[in-house]
Amino acid sequence: MATQLLKGKKGLIFGALNEQSIAWKVAERAVEEGAEIVLTNTAVSIRMGTIGKLAEKCNTIVVPADATSVADLENLIDKTMEHFGGKFDFMLHSIGMSPNVRKGVPYESLNYDYLSKTLDISAISFHKAMQVARAKDAINDWGSIVALSYQAAQRTVCEYGDMADAKALLESIARSFGYILGREKKIRVNTVSQSPTLTTAGSGVAGLADLLGYAERMSPLGNASAEDCADYILTLFSDYTRKVTMQNLFHDGGFSSTGISNEIIDIYFKGTADERE
Ligand SMILES: NC(=O)c1ccc[n+]([C@@H]2O[C@H](COP(=O)([O-])OP(=O)(O)OC[C@H]3O[C@@H](n4cnc5c(N)ncnc54)[C@H](O)[C@@H]3O)[C@@H](O)[C@H]2O)c1
Image 1 (tube, helix red, strand yellow):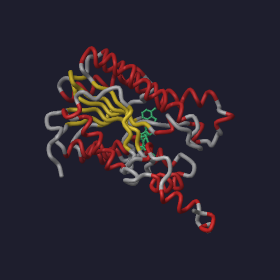
Image 2 (image 1 turned 60 degrees about the vertical axis):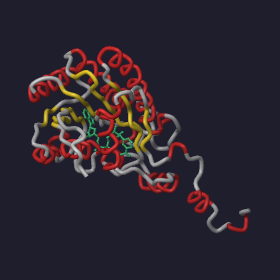
Image 3 (image 1 turned 120 degrees about the vertical axis):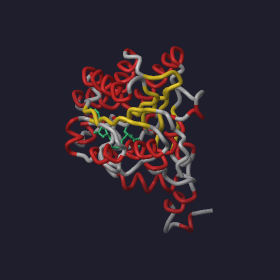
Image 4 (image 1 turned 45 degrees about the vertical axis):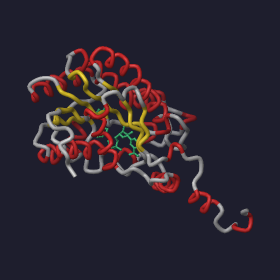
């Protein structure tokens, strides 16, 4: 159902690792909608994943960059502008990693070196990418920048560990930098808070299958898939959302506004029907 929503727009997409990645779906859909893109990921992820296949499909280049390295980001923005022959219109930050979560370190005994890495990779890299893009005046007026978040930034989710702190910081950075870029260049900055989704990063959270099932039963519209997420993000890159900025936008089938659902009550009381009114 491509409508050329992004015809004439150019963008930089961080975080496509493999076909499950949310960034992969955004890249595919953005190109279907008429955009030109540049892809980036770490050198290791480029080697381990399948981003080359995506680049071929999207007729573009992949520039290696560790998003925690300002030098890498400077090179990335230069290469991206070279590729496009000038400025671009949108940027997607779809990056997350916690060594504490990956190694099963519980929140009450965090390894602080790992915590620094979690925050740097999953949140501060968003600040770094915007700071470098701003310094190089890389993004057109009325451009759009989006990062992926999760509702553990607002409400505790067991097993999400220090990623919750990283997401809270990420959302705050979106507001703080959104003010500056909005005032200076009318560039908007938002985070999209996505349903749990079966991806490599998602699978790092213990009990993801249970979380998916719970969220599915709690959400009146059901969980939002990676494809649904891509479609939503395209609207934020389009000219139809030019006055939306500094927001954390829930894309979760209604989960975040639901206190309790019939389906969850049914499961909770299964076998104890007599106790129910
Ligand atoms: N999967 C979910 O359940 C879910 C839910 C809500 C939000 N999110 C968020 O969506 C985003 C994308 O994750 P995903 O689910 O598509 O998983 P994914 O594993 O496909 O993507 C994570 C990406 O981060 C990249 N990355 C890690 N360290 C990096 C670094 N130093 N520099 C540059 N890139 C780096 C990885 O290479 C990978 O491509 C993340 O921010 C994640 O927290 C995911």
